[in-house]
Image 1 (tube, helix red, strand yellow):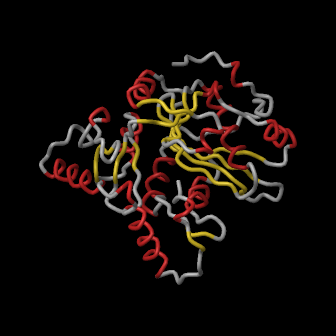
Image 2 (image 1 turned 180 degrees about the horizontal axis):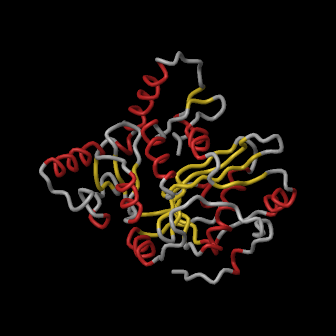
Length: 294
């Protein structure tokens, strides 16, 4: 996730010591945009509840009691350990922030893809059939995270994927819960990809990138073809965007999302994933899936 288009500025060469300061200033400016001016009140409320020991388990509030302002806030601070991240995703909670301390969220609306509703454009099917790109799983997790965090060419882009996030999700990947999809061009260069977390029958897509046209879509469709084969129900995209809507995602409420999450069985045990060459991604017809729909 990156800053809105109007918020991006032309990227200037910066000395290494200045870059964190500039990124911090951009993060502060983003936090002070009008839709978020009252969010500090919610942050202070959660911090006070935490200080007074009003925690309920690993998080100050359960998802169903998340704050309405800011929407979905359930906790502030605390470690990003493997155990806590696993528990968070199992409850439909994820960490995200531009500025410390760390915030934990379970928003009232989720952008999700029911795998039977996947959309694959004819042009994308054609690219898949041409075989110009090779797709792998879990072979370059850190490189994918760094690519997702990198500013887009010619622009300063605000990202939440800090060194702390990278370390936490690297540990989650080593434990077999976080996964990456890599798209390689004919010269062996990483051209696109995504990373996310598997919990029960849901895959939580955290971020994606493309260095060549359609490569993030190739990663997404290839992943979803495997998720469907492995018995997953949803691919979660968190907040709706025009790009996600074009891929077939739609919004559902937190209660419905958490019910699906809790009802889902463990589709795949924690382990490294591998692409199944027998699966036909280009010819996949998602509507043929016999999945429960709301």
